[in-house]
Image (cartoon, rainbow, N blue to C red; front, side, top):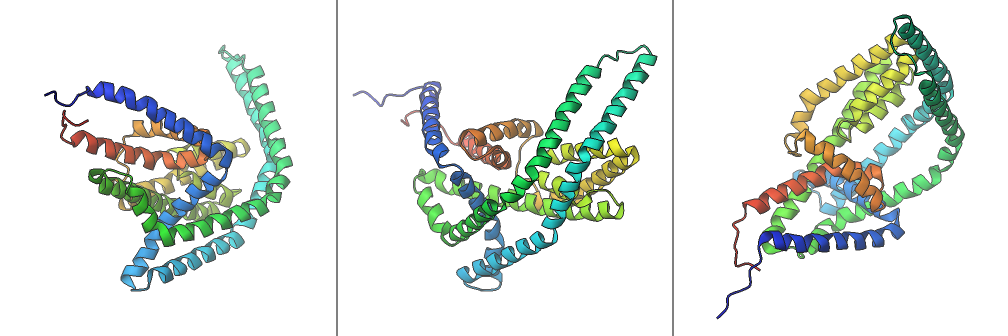
Length: 356
């Protein structure tokens, strides 16, 4: 009697990968016409992950019913958002408008720096034929600044649509909080029994821990930068501090933002550019060395090289599936961490050649 037909693992993988790619293509065809709702749903799910932490703490420590704990957290969250909107948004809009108006003057100053650099290089016999390149670059940057100033009113006019989407996301997040456990249990039933607990624990733990830590770090860093920039009387300090704090949500992006902001201010005043660079690095190092290890620990568990690979893949995937590149960047690290954990667990499983 013949035994079960056994295929080598390389052959099974070669059959699975095309089917997996086909399923991804079908999923993309289904999601693209629904944009931007898939992105809003994922955003609501991330917010639900974050709000689930304090709601569970209130439920377990204070003994309040689950629905009441969620209501308390939702009311507090909306209150904090309204307070931040009243206190910060008008100032951010005002500083953004001033920055856009001053950009052309800063670009003229940059052109002067390029001219002096060219004269310095020419006087020492160094290659200095980069005038055309710098002129073209400055022209493009000036055009971008002009377009931004023209589109500022359009951005402000889109506030109604943004407000509606925000309310939709918050309401959806509350419903996901209320029915999150049954939804998770229903989706987990599609998984094999031996993988069910591992997959659910890995995804929930990684996403909840990663985004909770990143959001807290972004808020702490923004608050610290606002205080330091205000003491140093840095122009557009609130705008730059919030920008640096927000980019903390994406690995390595805050460092690029700090360098860019410092270079931009250095066009007007080199000393000011050095001051903001030193202050931002000092605050960032305090947060990275003192606060981040206590909040994040080893949740991600990825080497820096894998992070650099995961970020562009996440951005491209988000664009392909209609979620947006920004959401793809935000999801890239926790998704890559979950994949690594599951692959490591799969490699540790005993291999049964008779399994079909």
